[in-house]
Length: 246
Image (cartoon, rainbow, N blue to C red; front, side, top):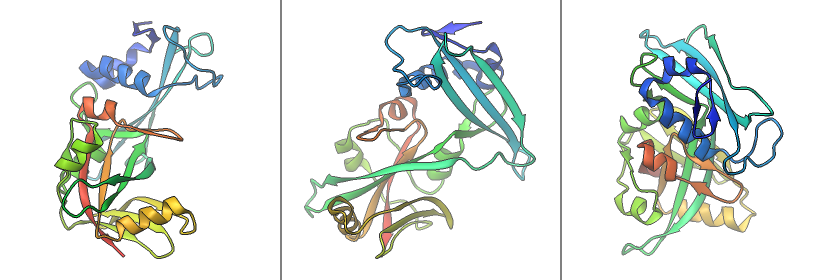
């Protein structure tokens, strides 16, 4: 049973992650705060275990697509493990999770910028097991004009963000429904409450014409914050400004 950074894991994981195994484990730990089993804080230096559920499928071109759903526990609560199952076709669609915020613009317009941030859980990658794997989400967004960002600073993200291709739109309805479409596919949606001052302010900022979208793998959402450091460090953070259709 190998141990990396106090985390015991199943050696079979290497057959899927290859040389990225150590980095994957480090990322999982960076995003974890509580034991999946007992829900108590993990604590610094605690003996931990990693369990990974892998779903393997193939797209219409025969390319292998994998989803990795992981959990971190105290070693005393759960032994490390790895389960593998095959999907009939492409693995089931991951769930979209996200948040929204407003950034103060430092440009000449002086307008606030509406930000829509989201990721897919669990992450989906494609490639050959044991070789280099590519994020499905990151690859799709890059193909539509989004740019990689290696800096988690909102100031730098706002400064460097560029307009994406016209295949991407963010529909903002009067009812408060927000829907991000990429090449006609609904990628993420949120329902805002127009009676809530914070939501109303976001909708007003979006109606200025553009929404800054922050996405990619390894984004961490909490009840009070959005953490981008792991995504920026791992090269899985993408950004772009998308036209807001009202």
